[in-house]
Amino acid sequence: MRILLTNDDGIHAPGLKVLEVIARTLTDDIWIVAPQEEQSGAGHSLTLSRPVRVREHSARRYAVSGTPTDSVMMALGVVMGDAKPDLILSGVNRGANLAEDVTYSGTVSAAMEGALAGYRSIALSQVYAREGMGDTVPFAAAQAWGKRVLEPLILAEMPERTLINVNFPAMAPDAVRGVKVVEQGFHEYGRAKIVKGIDPRGYPYYWFGLGATKQTPGHATDLEAVADGFITVTPLHLDLTHYVSIPILTQALSGC
Picture 1 (cartoon, one colour):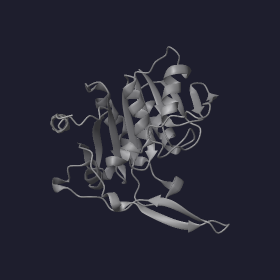
Picture 2 (cartoon, rainbow, N blue to C red):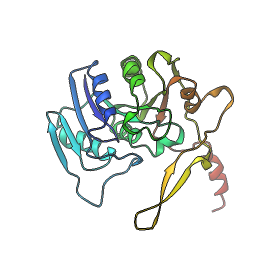
Picture 3 (tube, helix red, strand yellow):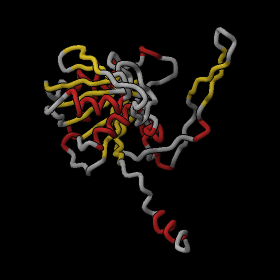
Picture 4 (cartoon, rainbow, N blue to C red):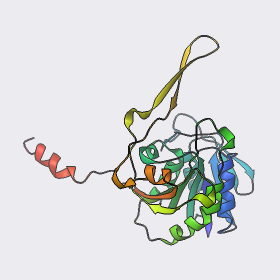
């Protein structure tokens, strides 16, 4: 089995090292193509206004001067040549990728690009307990449970243009309560905190943070399950059509 590894935290990110350790328990045929620098929040963006460059760091390890989506496209279209992957793994992200945040996530978007190209793709993220942890974020839960979660997911039959989003809770591996397949949740939109500061020249700047989450009966969403101590597995699909609205809009436009 040939596995392509990528992320949005950059080629030198601790989480990518964790992902490589996990992947090497599954195969020795590993390729790494990741952004040269951190691209958190890049979403499913492409670099169109400047050239994209690829730098080889070592055998089968490349950095791309662009987004996570750029990295997957360069891996599949240039770097790997005819040696196409059987599996694409993106992560392990430093921080959660839950609820509607998947639309902002470069980690999830790299897996989206893989799914669009027809490859089994899985995004993995490690939740952390509090803001401001920086490089001290522990990846122990992801490292201990990664292989155990991935092995059955690799074998599962999935429809075309789907991907899998996995989040590991912020706790020690032996405290994890298990694995739950759950739906995508939604935050309260007003949860975002906009923190204002003043730069050394006296000009204001703003930094985005996060606030509280919305709760649902039965704790059926990824947000609640990971807070309850479970590893969450959420299948995502790339067809954004809202089929229920098609007859509604057809009727609304019938007189046009």
